[in-house]
Image (cartoon, rainbow, N blue to C red):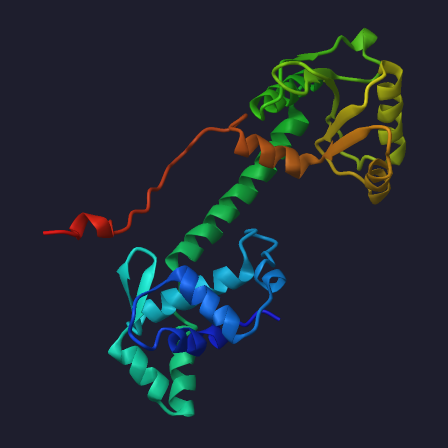
Length: 274
């Protein structure tokens, strides 16, 4: 069990109570040792941000302690306990509990920004999916080839409908063209099931191909995903509407920058020296 932000506060202050400067790594290691956390526990990630949960909660604890002036940042990523912090460690249990309750209400502005960015991105994903569903089927195939090229694959092309055997495009695995990857992109409303994926797999066999990417603007059934997981002679990647939209955002396909925010911090090294 990973300690909560509330549970981390006093151990964090205890680790640095000698008033020496400690880096975030030193603090994290000291608190992890206090709780006897294993490497596996420290490596558990949040499903939303993919950040290590322990590191995330330690960051929140440091921010709240710094905001209430129980610790101070003496140089970049380096902290030191203050006299108020030492006093907190010497307070009675009731007083400590009261102070920790107040710390829980301190909001990290970076978390607020991250939450809002996630909301904006979720709206953008839904908008992209709507536009993909409304796009002409030929345009969708072109978008997919452009996306895969932007992701670092080699040259690609949309196949002729009269001679594609159910395959919509071909793309080189790398810029040297060492292998072909066949692509099927479908603008569907309904969930894509196992029969459709099996049909795509058969089209790959007809081409003697071992690799394929099946893309849909909708979703795949669990049966379809289980089928590709069990394949041994070939590799098929399934990309649903949400993943497709996220990849488009990451690779700047079909999107543009509306507004950019830059967050600055003090450059501690600038003020060093005589």
